[in-house]
Image (cartoon, rainbow, N blue to C red; front, side, top):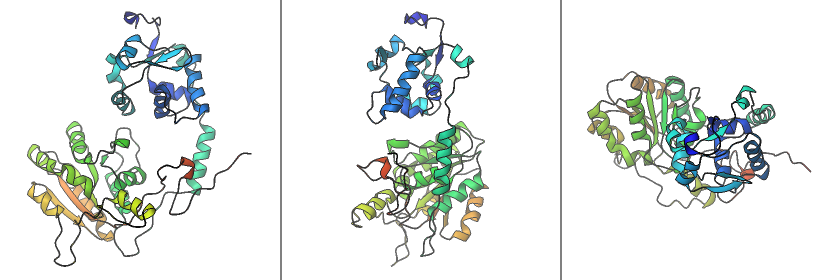
Length: 360
């Protein structure tokens, strides 16, 4: 780094991930502190600042010039990093940022002393919450499919070596909850960006990059209709992804909010793509749509058929497969935090909140 003349010649580079490890906080928390965000507690902010001071971090001048530096720590100028760069860091692609010099420097002796955060107390707290508020869901009383069950079975049958991609909405949350991820870079989604339509093209890219790996796109019937034209690309270019449409006939996440907070005043959330009670048609019929695009189209409406349909899809490796899972329309994502409230007001089920320990 001497070519930049920042006064830290001879020191090794360190990633923001390593800063987070030293401070015992998440990468996202470091990014909030770096960017001067206000949604970090004073205690956490002081902790990250102390790591910066005690371990001699400083920022390359070219990084400040690149990103429009700002002073966030006392006596330390840090970069206001563009979200694109942080996105790369969060996805494990920090090495790609080397040329942008969005790195901090740290004396190598810190690593030699094996400086790490102490997480024992935090893990104890997490395990207590897991035991008291275990992950679960209710089976629909009308006998329809529980979407959580469908996603859970995909995860079990495809296994931890598969790559899973999700769109945006309830199915995204359920895929995060009910699939057991054991390997890095096997869970792709757009995070808080809210990019509906992400699943199909992202799954295509994952399959092209890892042709020997099974890739499942878990999508909602709303999201799927934003990029389902890419099925043509999959068929023409020979990209055999597997797409599970969690079809509740609605924009499910919006419907959940309208149910909980707007007295069931449903507006523009019914997609009308489930079976019409009068003439038996589906608009659109995703099985026919898949067939029209040169893919294999399957449909599942009963719990007892879920495993067999998934296994049928798993056995097809030379064509894209689309499964239309018809699920209960009023299944909800829990836990959740209502808009404009504190995370302390989280609900783990309808009208049910955790009992927090309070200190006097």
